[in-house]
Length: 356
Image 1 (cartoon, rainbow, N blue to C red):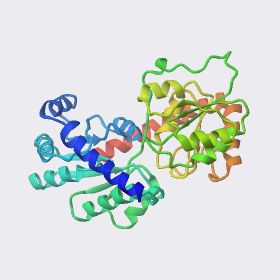
Image 2 (cartoon, rainbow, N blue to C red):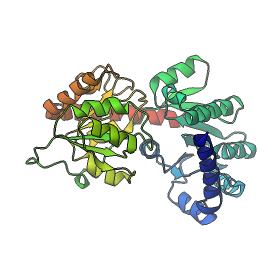
Image 3 (spheres, rainbow, N blue to C red):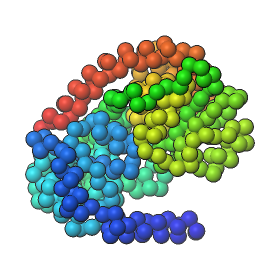
Image 4 (cartoon, helix red, strand yellow):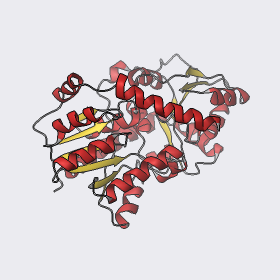
């Protein structure tokens, strides 16, 4: 009962916060649109507080707008004024109030195409908020306010295409342009460093199996962002004193920490097309991941880094061992894989944007 009351109060506070305190105004909206290319016929919206989604959106699209919750009709109208003449408006994820902008755009321009990029999979629909949001997406599609469902998880695309939805598979990617800003650990640092990082703001992805796996490395330094009381307590039970932070941090600061590890571990139940493994590899650090995304399929890199029995603690440890032992080989294989993947990615995005 207390949880329900707290959740209700939190939701009401957020509505007040974004409507009256943190809301966009005309000056901020004008500044957002100054940063995009008016010659392109599309715009992609993302919530800047969702770090993985933001990273994905910026890698996929040149024209992006950082837009948070929309509870003010005035702000919806001002955004619609700017967006109504675009051919395509892409919503990357689904944030409270965005449906009002979708409806306003369709009311003004019946020919505008509205597409939503869904970054999740059905595994997380057991979470109350995820279920509510995806249900809203499906309703908006059936009512004609969304023209296309776009998935970064290939099997989600295949399912909804088979169900008769207008759907598209869009490949995630990430390329680090400023590697010099993120040095790897020094050769004389012999301490084993392992990284554990949450998905956005939540630990809903196989957390405790991963903690158990890294606890098998005695005296290892485990960097964890952002741990909570439960995670910290569980780690202590397993003889781990976590380093890191109990607060989330800007991407650049997080990248500096990730680059100092020997291996980053992101072996989760609910992968879609996760950004963190790609970010880790780009930083020069092998990442253990799981076999529920499309990366590395049919390659030696898959054999060396991807856990196939995701509920098996020892299987996670086996891939951590593999990354430690084969680090140089893995990074060489990644660079070869990335060259070909970049070509596929560019073609995939180009074809998506050129759809009639």
